[in-house]
Image (cartoon, rainbow, N blue to C red; front, side):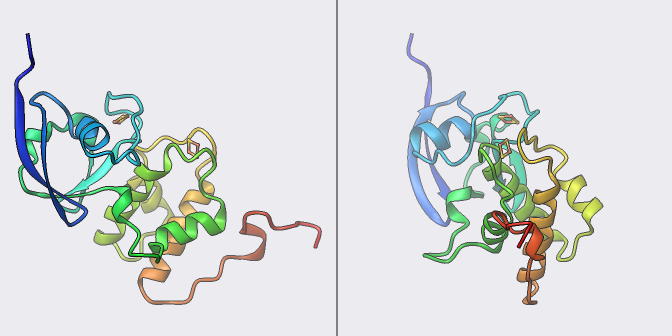
Length: 176
Ligand code: FES
Ligand code: FES
């Protein structure tokens, strides 16, 4: 028996896209399978890893737990929408500069959770950053670089100068 399908116009990264999908499919499934937006990662599908985090109406949500049919026309933001033309988002800049992504599997979800945090709190403390990212698991980095990168992005977004300490830059020669 064929599954029920839904045809819906979604607002993704500022672009309206009409997509047809099985009615029971989650936002994670529709973004990846119908829209080809594979930056949003498929992890546990249980709401436990944060790899699938996107923004709906500016709020971080776990797209594996959201039915697409319930999103309606609310704006959806994925990691593909972070960059502005050729310009990286400050979060992307600081993550790259500090080596805050290693295998990168958790990174899209962390970037989106951090974007939501910085939209609500322009100058979060390190404990506040850790709290906001507590639902995003990373197997590689130990989290310290991630917290530093989010803190650095908050500085850039406030229009202030940010210069990472030399020893925190990825690839820095500790003997030089
Ligand atoms: S895939 Fe959604 S929380 Fe893990
Ligand atoms: S960079 Fe590999 S899981 Fe986070």
